[in-house]
Every structure is written in structure tokens, then in C-alpha cells.
Amino acid sequence: MSELFLALIIGLLAKVVIDEVGATIQALARSIVKRGAQLLPDGERYEEQWLADLNDRPTPVRKMFFALGILWAATVLRRESALRPTNARRDYAAELYFWQKSPESLVKSAAFEKALAQKGIKRSKRVMLRVRALYELALTRDDLTPEQHEYLREFLKSLPEDK
Amino acid sequence: MGNTIDPKISAQGAAVLRTFLDAYPNQLTGSEVMDALGIASGTLYPILARFESAKWLSSKWEKGDPASLGRPRRRYYQLTALGSSKARACIEFILPGAWGRA
Image (cartoon, rainbow over all chains, first blue to last red; front, top):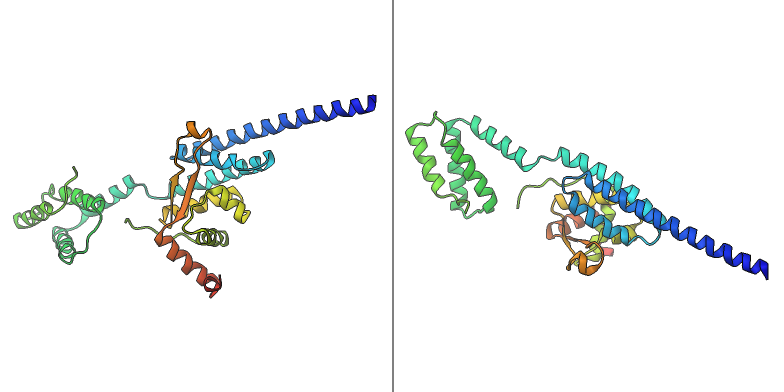
């Protein structure tokens, strides 16, 4: 009888310990996932997404493996996002390129845009707003002839405005 | 649509595309893809991010807010039309005739 009682107590204690260890592992896994998400520029999105996917892992051990994988994924994503040109860097590169074009080349580019529009080939408004910004910049140059300036100014009127 | 660069396709990437093609037009969470393929989170999420960046996949939040759901919202991924055609071409390239047999 006492052996049975002892076995029952040991079983209960083992369950308490296992539950406690499981809860600790889960808390640790959550903390690792949050830390991983913080490594990324759009960390808030990834934190919520990854915590939801963590919830779907069935056991504490799988949750921990998932979390450790997330740390690796975050490191890879962080490295790749650093290599990917941001909009700001792309914009700067475009402005620099545009600034270095010759006045004749600027007029040719505008004529090309006009030809595209006449053929009904449309680009997204976002792209056209960038084109507009570039030509607005080009109009501030002092090496344009009055004819070139007028041509570009007329072309600018045909581009959408940011409202 | 802005210009995007086609991502490099690894064996796991091709398997992920195949999973989305099989599920198309249903949406899948990262967790569901992991269950389907048995690949690690460290491998899967960079692949999903590359495909999303290339506009082969789109993603959106589960409807509802975390407070009413009682948990964080899931993020669902789905093949775009571009992704669908690229995925078929990619699988056809890797395993000629496989798509037709499926």
C-alpha cells in the first residue's frame, strides 16, 4: 500500500516537474522568437507571425527547435535586407544618374516617355511620380538651352502630380 | 508592378513552391508549410521572404484582432498569378513532365 502511495506521489511530482520544464521551455522559446524578430527592420510583423506559428508547434521541444530556427532565419533575413537596395538608396541612385545625363539625353528620355504614353503603354502611378520628381530636378539645371527647358517643362505637365 | 529579380531556387525552395501549387488557391501559414515538408523554420522563412519579395507570394493577416482571437494573428501566404506560372515553369524545369502527372 505504501509503495503504491509512493509511486502515486512520484508520478504526481514528475508531472509537476515536466509541466514546469515545458512551461519554462515555451517561455524561453517565445523570448528567443521575439529577440529574433527584433533583429529585423519590420520586426513587429515577424514577431506576431512567428509567435502565431510558434503556438502551432505541438510540443515544447518542437517549439524550442522552431525558436532556434527563427534566430537563424532572422540572421539570414537581416543580412539579405541589408544587401537589398532600399527605396531611399534607389531614389538617390536614380537622381544621381539623372543629374549626370547630358541635356540632349534628358530630352531623348522625355521623348521616349511620350512615345510610350502615345502607344498606350502605361506605368504605375508610383513610377510616374518618381519620373516626375526626376524631371523636376532636371529643370533646376543651368546647362539646358531655353528650347530644352521648354520641352521638358511641357513634358512635365503631362505627368501625374502627387496629391 | 515594380521590377523584381527572380530568386534563386534551391531544392527546398522548389518543394515550397510545389506545396503552394498543390494547395492553390488555398492560403498556407509558415507552420503549415513546415508540417507539410518537414523543413526547419530557419530554412523556410528566408525562402518565404525571398518569394514574397519577388512577388511570387503574397501574404496577409488572418482576420480578427489578437485580443478577440486570444493569440497572435497568423500570417497567410498565397501564390500570386506570377508565382503560379513561375512555380510551374520551375518544377517543369527540375522534373520535366512532373506537373502534368500530378
